[in-house]
Length: 221
Image 1 (cartoon, one colour):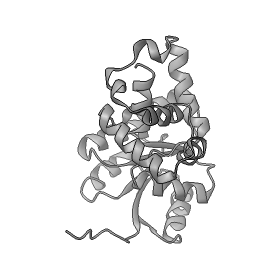
Image 2 (tube, one colour):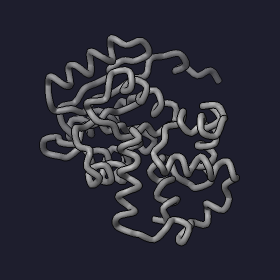
Image 3 (cartoon, helix red, strand yellow):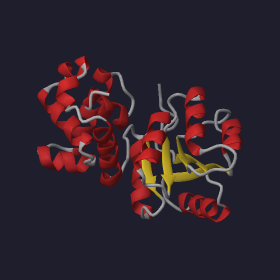
Image 4 (cartoon, one colour):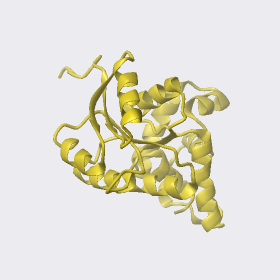
């Protein structure tokens, strides 16, 4: 069967209450090759009504929304459209907000100060099955769990981890340390695509759908 979405622009929905930020993001997407702003919502309730009826390829979600926080909006959206990739785009970089967003079902987490090229790269990555997150953010996730539970990961190793190959173990360790796919590829002297292949295999073996869930198992949570 032919994939009718092949070579089509990535359709992005925005959930952002600030009119200026919303307009700028929409203009950036529509002005970039390979992207289109499918819809823009000013609050979570509007997003919950519009997105399930016409799911985009990727959602960019703010946290501090009126009426309903972005974290709760993500939780409800994932219940309605489970495979919908959601990328948090927010000013918050504290561990608690990061943790709440990812546990609600967000696939990635970036700050609003992220440069345009990095943001577009992250949208491509999440659309292709990745979990974009800056090294700083990923390390905060790891530190969060290490601070609340000092038990080393190996002590509470999830049984599923025993099914990973040696290379997959190395890739997972890199993910847990907050390294990007390219950094893992460079360190292990393998290609970017090989890293992605290993990550897909890791997700399948661990029965997870995101970097965060994989890291949680690595940490024994």
